[in-house]
Amino acid sequence: MALSQRLFQAGLACAELMSCYLGTRLGLYEHLRDDPATPDGLAERAGVDARYAREWLEQQAVAGILTVREGVYALPPGHAAALTDPDSPTSVAALALLPVGGIAAALPDLVEAFRTGGGVDSFGEAADRGGFNRAVFRHDLPGWLRSGLPGLHRRLREHGGRIADLACGAGWSTAALAEEFPLAVVHGFDLDPGAVAAATATARARGVADRVRVRVRDVADPVPERYDLVCLFDALHDMPHPVEVLRACRALRTDRGAVLLMEPRAAHAFTAPGDEVERFLYAVSVLHCLPAGMRTRPSAATGAVLRPDRLREYARQAGFSDVEVLPARHRFHRLYLAVG
Image (tube, rainbow, N blue to C red; front, side, top):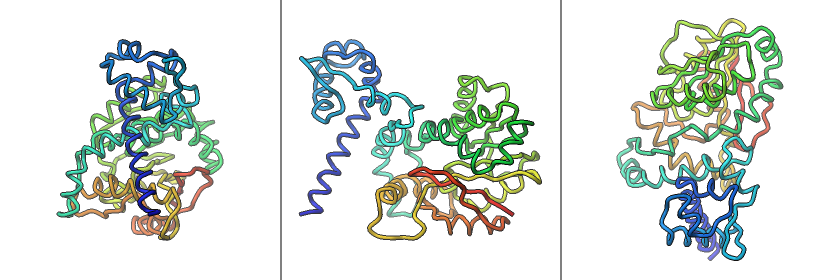
């Protein structure tokens, strides 16, 4: 009975996530952010059907996401920050809402992948790194660099240098690095031409395009350039050949350079049952990270639950002597420095 009740609550939460996904994708929250509306008013403003608008508004109010008074629906300011401001520390849309569409659409392919041992490349929005960690890069990364790499941080701030951002996605980390080090040149690399175009646009929008260059490139391929800081953020666990990628990272750094990794904050050892973070990491690993990493064969098939000891093993195989855990207080992320 306890399990039945728990799974009912999980199903309810999943259904509410999907309804929030509709609000995000249709821009309904943005239309309510500054101007409360009736169902007819929202329908006209957002270009949606009035009957659907009424049902959605009522559902959102019953769920406690919107408030309603005399038939007028409003989005509270705190909820607006979580749902409509991707730079807010409380932003949740890219992490919890948008992947719903991509993962749900890929479920039939996941069933087949489980049977065949293949991978899945039909995730759509679930595979879009554009906003997952946008607020982390903007609000947390600068402080992590100051506290974790004080000497290198000071050199890059005072004298500039060269930074490589591998698997940069839509470029939010690339732009954040350029903003934190205004004298440095930052090169972003990604396999996806669409991501490279998005990262280039991000650099322009953030006013750092004069010092940012983004290219399509497999990060495991050798690059005839050297960098004072080589970054690989929240990506190694998705890669089929992590040792080769780390070996390339080691080759990219200068003699005084550093290789910085951000990976999920997995527990040090398997424990069941786990806490909420471990449950989240395993869920996204089963539904996305592992099948995405198994699209290429052979594959290390790492998955999202990349524990420190396994990362250390990868690093040593790549020629590093060890990895150090740097001070970075975050619920979902851990910061590593590859040394040696």
